[in-house]
Image (tube, rainbow, N blue to C red; front, side, top):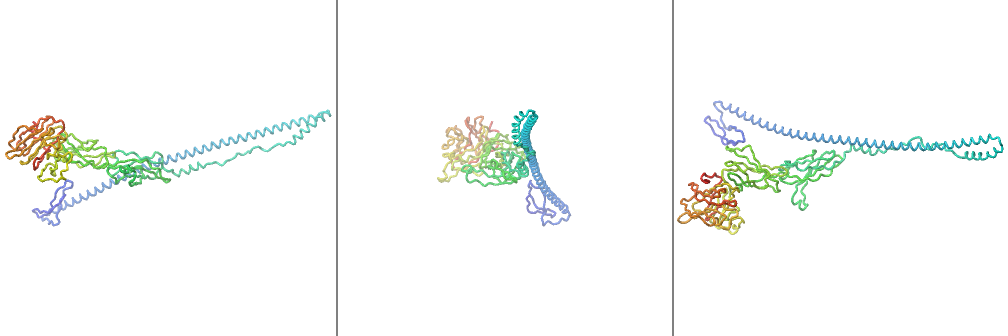
Amino acid sequence: METHKGVSDRGGRTFQRFSVDTNESLHFEPCEDSSPSPTGIEHDEDNVFIKDENESEMTSIRNRLQGKVAEMENFAGHLEEIFLTVEENFGRQEQHLEQHHNDVLQTLSQRHNERAAGLVEEKKSKMEALYSQLLSCGQALDASKELIETAQEIYRTPDKRVFLKTVMPIIKRIEMFAKEKVDLTLSTKLDFETPQADLSDVKTMMDSVNAVPAPSAPVINPQMSNSATQTSLRVCWSLFSDDTVEYYDLYYRPVLEDTLADGFCQPHVSTVKVKETHCTVTDLLPNAQYELWVTATNTTGISPASEKALYMTVPSPPVIKQRECTSCPDAALIRWESGNTNPVDSYTVELSEMDTDGTQSSITESIVAVPTCQCLIQLLSGRRYLISVRAVNIGGPSDKSDAVYISTSGTFFYFLEETAHPCLSISEDGFTIFYGDEELPISAMALDDSAFTRCVAILGDLIPVRARHYWEVEVDEGTEFRIGVAYEDTERNSYLGVNGSSWCMRHILSSSRHKYEFLHNGWSPDLRITVHPVRIGVALDYDRGTLSFFNVNLEQHLHTFQCHFRNLVQPCFSLDNPGSLTVHNGIEAPEYTFI
């Protein structure tokens, strides 16, 4: 609300004047030099002011509380993310401990089986050695027993000669047996060997329970739709293994075209350290491509870097070219500039109808996946629309462009400035052309390929819709002109109406009278118009194949061309002598024009 100087009422009280802003509450403020009211009414007014101040203070407190609530909600969301991360790390650590436990048990079981197998082999070897020694002892006992029995039999022989004959060999055998040494020591030890167990790998496993391995390389996720704003990116990644991670380092840098071309002059790499597996990178350029990669770190070391991923920020809002937007009662052609250096995927056109009181309707229609910087929209006749455009890439849609108002009450267009003859100038509002009598320098005569070179003419930018179109032209009485329609590729070094690609009404000023011609291919019917039309209506009907001219002030029909236009035509205007010409469009066609 904007306040102004104070004014006094009849009671002597002074208040400040004010203007109403719909975005602010309406309240009065007393001037500092206001005098006290003799009637005592001022006390009530003070109460009103105090009430207003209290309400303002309550509103301020409420806004601060809402801000605190929003901060607390954000903090609660952050705590929830940390909680999930702790749960995830706990699960991974628990699985890690269980795996270590199983590995240690498996290793000890393997060592037990190996030791048991060794004991069985050692037992077998000892038993075989003892059995062999026992067998040798038995054989020695059998031999000694036989020798003793043989000696006893010889000793008992009564025949002395037989005794003497046989005793000597026995004596020799006994001497030989006595000379043989019998090993009475055990051939093997009764005790089993106790080898030193090699449990170094088990010790390594036990030590690795407390020594966390370095993490493996993270996997950065591809960009998801609606994951960006104009200056920020939300990046997510994951781990395929059960690694324990203390924090992540996210690296990013813009991707420039010259960088891709030569590989030199790499842009600066920025880094963000986070504990979660996601991060929002801010302070970025709009509609820019960024290269990102991640590393994971714990107490043991740093992982290898992930593969690099490309992300895109949301584009800047497009800029609607209002001077190039045209409309008719059935449609509108909206043109815009991308506003972005890098190309975008598509555009979305949003339109909402304006109510009769000037307020915007709550219903918004969208036309999506528009590939180029223009869109032809079918509309309802006699309505007003508010139209804006968004640019879209993989990161999401941009903010809305500045809106343009479109009315479908009549045909609306601007001049095609690139077709203007160098001698023509266009007014600031874009609806009046001037032909001055001063000579132009040679440098100013440089012509565009699409500009008229012979006829001092210009084309209008009519919407490319085969429907009914109506506009009016206002001219001075002393101006010679040609108005009508022409194909867009009409000859630029020819006069309007003298070729087969243009149809026009011509005004020729003579000393005696005003002469009018309706030219096509250089031919005109013999017509006489007695009242000079100051404002001329032009009605184009594609369906009927007609082009009609009217004296608007008299509602008088002047002439109609009967022609079937093979292509779309554009309004054309020409000044044959110095003067001006004004186009009035966006108006509803009178009833008499398309009877």
